Image 1 (cartoon, rainbow, N blue to C red):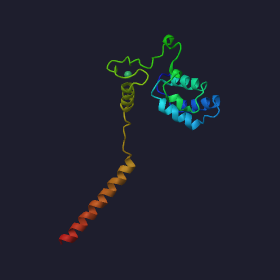
Image 2 (spheres, rainbow, N blue to C red):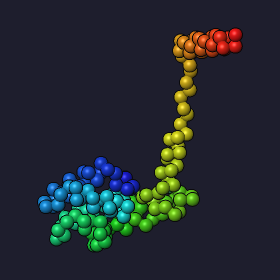
Image 3 (tube, rainbow, N blue to C red):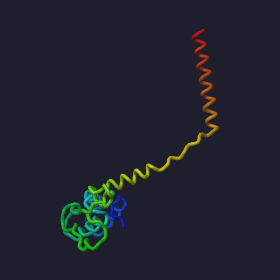
Length: 150
Ligand SMILES: [Zn+2]
């Protein structure tokens, strides 16, 4: 189950769903509200909260990002998904939220960087061309030096 911050693709799909459920709210406004609220809760909770807002009498989707009853999830205590305030269980990550752990993301990025870089073997043909070019430059410099010193 995805428990992280909502992705752009998810937010786009959710905005269209919310707009379909609530005629009069434009997709751009919904996207803006989802963007403002994206760090309030994991993606699935944000989706539920946004959909709950379509049932209210708010005139604009800005209500999605505001405090309100739409954030209270009945039955949340029976789910196994991390709550909004649960900390990351990894050692040393205790200051990060489980669903939005910067340390886990940093470790993932570091792991990506640790991939061995492909070894580059010089192309013998290109090396020969470069060597010939270097030799021609040396000769030209030597000739120029002789002309200036003689
Ligand atoms: Zn973590």
